[in-house]
Image (cartoon, rainbow, N blue to C red; front, side, top):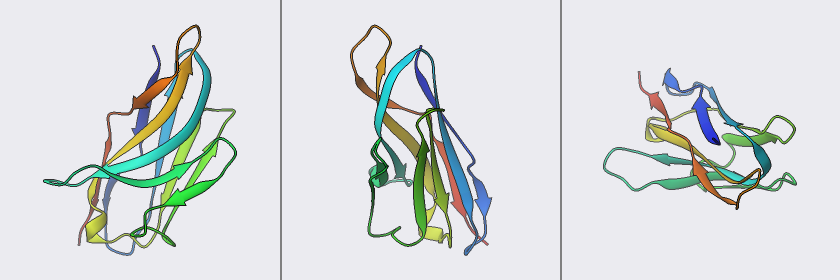
Length: 120
């Protein structure tokens, strides 16, 4: 069974840093177009950053210059380095990826989310 598991969330003061990790496990034939989303209380889920298998990245305007998405194709891992965190970055962060399990069709998978809280 293919699954995505996020880790690395927590409580941090404004201006601090966190590094989120997303690990894909199971019988994976291919994985591409991974992304981080976030959802704050009472708000819709929003796209934070994306990365292609070839390493092309894209960011929401609100995080440009502060967040960096990266990936390790060999390990089926995706990371989100978050610097200069602000209270408005507080949200549950979700990993998303297009995965083709061995012997099956490609579809999008979601992780369970990891909480990031930025507060004094």
